[in-house]
Amino acid sequence: MHHRIRPLRLTAVTLTAGALSAGLLVAPSASADPSPALTSAKAAVAGTDSTPSTIAAEWIAGELSNGLMVSSSGPDFGLTIDTGMALSTVASQGGTVTAINNSLEPRIAEYVGDGTKESYAGALAKSATFARTAKKNPTSYGGINLITRLEERTANVPADPAAEPQAAAIAGRIFDKSEFGNYANVVGQSYAVRALTLAGSAEAGAARDFLLKQQCASGAFRLNFDKADVPSQSCTEGVAGSTADPDATALAVINLVESGDKSAAVVGALAKAGTWLAARQRNSGAIRSAGDGAQINTNSTAIGGYALGLLKNRDAALKAALWVRKNQPVDKYKCRTALTKDTGAVAFRRDRVTGATTTGIPAAARDEWRRATSQAILGLQFAPASKDKLRIVSVRKQARAGERVQFQVYGLAPSESACMQVKGDFLRVKGKKTGDKIVRKLQLPTGNQRRVGLIKTSDDEARTSLRVRN
Image 1 (cartoon, rainbow, N blue to C red):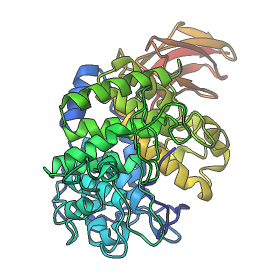
Image 2 (cartoon, rainbow, N blue to C red):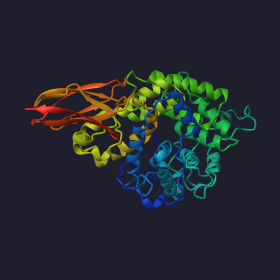
Image 3 (tube, one colour):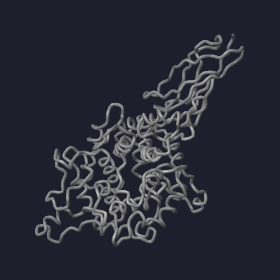
Image 4 (cartoon, rainbow, N blue to C red):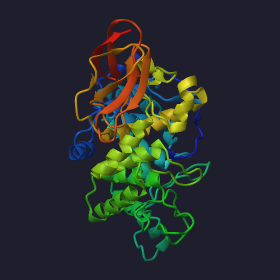
């Protein structure tokens, strides 16, 4: 599941559809080039298909309202940042990243707190990370020095650790300052490590060391910290509060890789985490979440697959991307459904697709689709490309009306959705994991004339023809 940095005190979760304001695109576009880590990882994987991440990005960009994700209660800044971070990996979305930044920056205090009574560590870390991604300065973002604020929320290393063992135990740990309580967790800590490291902060090392304490012996990271007065602040395998969490693990990996920290401790931690994530992955490519309501879903699978891709585990990243792509319905042309207008959106689980094909995405479920899609964009970066040019071949030159005739389809990418059709008949098909040809039969209509067989994907089509006789 998607982990929020803090409870929703100022935001809500039920979102309504909106349109991206064209006026926000006047400013020069932020770069949406993949990070060096992603560029390197994709080069190692090789042969990826940009289509699924591109159409997912196009869909979620259309869900923004004046550059923000908005609910009936106001903007959801956390989801807005998740969306902007995901879109920054899609080259065509630089303008949307700029639009998000232009709307988010003037209102960032609403998300991170006023800096006196309210100051939210995870939100500060995530905001600083996005600011840098959007090519902005996190030390002066919306008039706020996010790095200084984050350093204030990061526990200091005591001058004499031996004399202050508890202060030494929590050194580098992030804390919220809030009348609502302290909800800082390992996900926020991982963003803090990334933000502080890239800013060259003197507190980056302590924050990193505290994050690494949250890695369990298995290689997984837990989600929540111990209480601040517990002498040992480290994950203890098998003890309550140290449950392995695949989402926290994936985000720790992503943020550590993107921090650029090449220390031996980080390199070792990444190797262990990658091994654990790969072992957690099922043969289907899916990854199951943890905690209450644990289930297989596209969120955990996508960010887990993205983390594995950044670690250059080619096979695991491809498998995860294939499973996520299966949950991206593309029902076009004769195969049109109520979901066609939302082409590109990714479902949290397959059962959500089944219902939405007849009703469309329910208003109350739109938030879930947005969250699933924002993270799916990342995992889909490693979707494998097709082996061949898209084409369809009829095995016969002519046939009688009403006969079911075999057609062969080449060039579908693994798990890619397509519609096969001839006048009067159609089939939904998906590319094989192997990328090999697909063979299906379609029933020919009446009439003595040449008929066209088509295969249509979200961005391409091919055709063949044969003569039909009554």
